[in-house]
Structure formats: structure tokens, C-alpha cells
Length: 323
Ligand SMILES: NC(=O)c1ccc[n+]([C@@H]2O[C@H](COP(=O)([O-])OP(=O)(O)OC[C@H]3O[C@@H](n4cnc5c(N)ncnc54)[C@H](OP(=O)(O)O)[C@@H]3O)[C@@H](O)[C@H]2O)c1
Image (cartoon, rainbow, N blue to C red; front, side, top):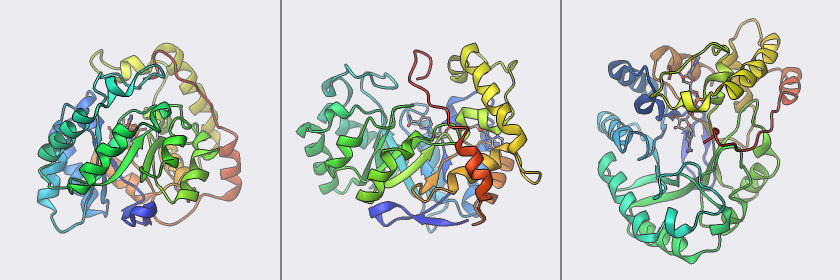
């Protein structure tokens, strides 16, 4: 496993981190297998774990807490998130700070996460949604300063809404935020336009989430794929999205090198960008953990392939199903 400096936090984090949403929120999770996957990831050098109170109302955080107890000497880095008070993902531009992140609520949820994780201090606490219109509001700024002074959180981050990579730029310029989490993958390349240059200039940590476009970039979805009604993906991969996502993935297939699969190519595309410090595939199977961590071997995709992949950029805007 290769490690990267996580911006000005000076943490050294594994360039393949662990996305902990699916293991409680998606159908088809086998808890024994999930646990083995988590153990294997630590043994193979993964030290960055991304969870959220919103993943199973604290259950994913509790699983991470158990992992921290099992590996007290591994220096595992904990990233979690405060859910929006109005429980609406993502936020909309007309939502007010008062309805999404009032000060007492921010404090309350930091305390919930500390309890779920069973730690005294969280390495990275992220806002699970964000609106840049809140940038200059003193309430959240003073609240996070207070929480940091109390020693409950080391660093603060924003998880930027899907397909809105510029919806935090003014907030980052306040200097209060240490890291961003954003969708960046072969399709979603637009964070490289404005967000990454700003993060580079300000020396902020960058987490690339959803490396496989929720599964499309594994090349395993087909136009006939059906998710159970209680699986979040059934509301995301509506026919309009599933059909065009599969078409975009199929267009990539001829580019996949003979010695890799599409998932590996997708991860190596992200790792080729130095502005990214870790990417956090969702993983619930040991074989996925092994495969994804193996992509962190310091070897780069051919430049000519990267040039071709840049042509597969797919700019999308939020819709009523995109969430
Ligand atoms: N708003 C937010 O802040 C937000 C939103 C979305 C996601 N996230 C974070 O980002 C993480 C990653 O996103 P995601 O989990 O939604 O999507 P993702 O990483 O793009 O895709 C996850 C899917 O890829 C599969 N997979 C993983 N490795 C594979 C491999 N080598 N070959 C084939 N399939 C593979 C997984 O299967 P298995 O599950 O069967 O292993 C899972 O179905 C989340 O877990 C969460 O931590 C944050």
C-alpha cells in the first residue's frame, strides 16, 4: 500500500481507503464477510476509514469503533459525518443553515459519533451535505472552533454534494476546513477544474469518493440489473440513469488493458492524480479489498491510456433521482 500526505493535516493516509456506507445500507451485506473484509484491509495496510452517522443511524460508526479496538496500534484514521438535521441528502440551495446545521445540533452529533466510535477524539469530522451560501456564517465557524478547542475533533471536512464540485469553494477560502470529500472518477472529472487547484493552493486534504460511480465503473452492471426496493440503488439507478450509465461504461470496455478489469482501471485513473490523497471504494467482500488494495502499487497507467480516459469525462447535473 502506498501512502499520501493528507494536505495540511500532515496525516499519512493510505491511497486506498475504505468506504463504509454499503456495509449497512445496501442489500446483500453479509456481516461476517464484511468483518473479514475490514480485517483484511487493515492487514493489507489500509488506514483510512470513511463512515457517517447516516450509515445505519450510527451502526457503521459502531462497526468502525470495534475495528479501532481490535487494532489499537495501527494508527487508523477515522472520518465520519454529521447528517443534515432535516435528513435531506443532498441539501438544496434554498435550505437554511438553521434547518440543516444549527450549532447545538452540530455539537449533539459530534457527541453521538464520539459515542458510536467509542473514541475521545475524531480525526476528521465532515458535514454530510453543504451549501456554499453558508460560507460566511459565523455560527458554524464558531461552533467548530469550540469543538476543536474541546479536543473532540482534530480536523474538519465537507462532503460535497453529488455533481456540485464547486459548491464549497467560498467556504474553503475561510480557512476553517481542512479536507474535502468529492465524487471524482473517470466520469466525474470536473473537480479538477476549480476545486483541486484551490485545494492544492490551500494545502487541503482531498478524498475521492464513489470511485466506481456506485458500481457502473466496475463494468458489472447491465441494463437488466435490478436492485431490491429497499436498496438505495433502486432509487438511483432508475432506467434513465442505468441505461446511460451502462452505455458510458461499455464505451470504456475497449480501453481496459488485457491484464486488468474495469474496476482496477477506474482506481488507477484516480490514483494517477496527485491532487487526490485517498479514494474510498465501498467494499463488502474480501476479494474486492484485495483487488482494490493491489491497485496501490505505485505503478501508473500508460499516459496514452490516461489521455483517452480524459475523453470519457461525463458532466452531469443534479436531478430528482441523483440524491
Ligand atoms: N454524500 C456522501 O458523503 C457520500 C455519498 C456516497 C458515498 N460516500 C462514501 O464513498 C464510499 C464509496 O462510494 P460507494 O460505496 O457509494 O460507491 P463505489 O465505491 O463507487 O461502488 C461500490 C460498489 O463497487 C463494488 N466494488 C468494490 N470493489 C470492487 C471490485 N474490485 N470489483 C468489482 N466491484 C467492486 C462494491 O461491491 P461490494 O459492496 O459487494 O464489495 C459496491 O457494490 C461510500 O462507502 C461512502 O463511504 C459518501
